[in-house]
Image 1 (cartoon, rainbow, N blue to C red):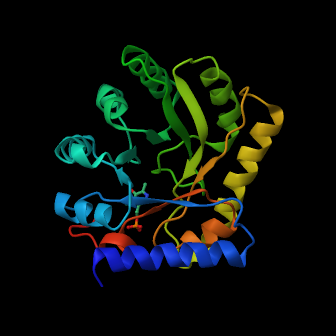
Image 2 (image 1 turned 90 degrees about the vertical axis):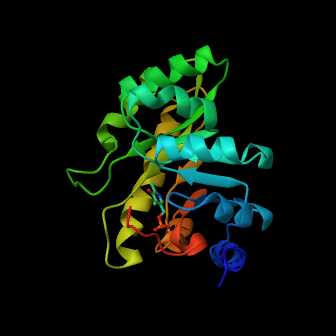
Length: 232
Ligand SMILES: *Cc1c(COP(=O)(O)O)cnc(C)c1O
């Protein structure tokens, strides 16, 4: 299968899954994760109709975004972000999925202000209790939200998570469900003066389970572009 066929296949599985779980009215969008993939592979996906691409290294994001400018793609940042790279990411990205600290949120807000922009962000939640994963603990979310609520150049659109490695997609269901419940709870408390609506969860191996649990953005690399070498 080529990229365009794989893309069509994923979109079909997404819409089948939405129909099965009665989600036609709350659609799901695909972020094609293009990390390590070439510009010509991204072009091919774009020609097949894909507009939103996810990257996790700043240098790679900037190069691709600049070289493919004429395609007017939408770039999402999905990797761990250091504050000294915030300026570039704000410059190139419509949505940043991986805000995991107050200091980073503050810096993004500052850079967005300088660039005269309101930056869409998601807060990355650490699920499953593994020490090495990035993200904030669920317990710390209300306080972080409270603080970001006063940052005028941030639009906190929702939450993102990367569950710990699992043997079976079903193993991730509790984490996906937890993320949805967490967003709903924060919305009910009206910590922000607008509701969060985005749940970024689900990858190549488990996106159908994520959709069943309420994902609105799924991040798919391998199943769109084929396997990555070397592994990232
Ligand atoms: C690489 C990556 C993905 C895509 O993973 P696949 O299993 O290839 O679909 C999704 N989200 C994040 C944060 C990633 O780094």
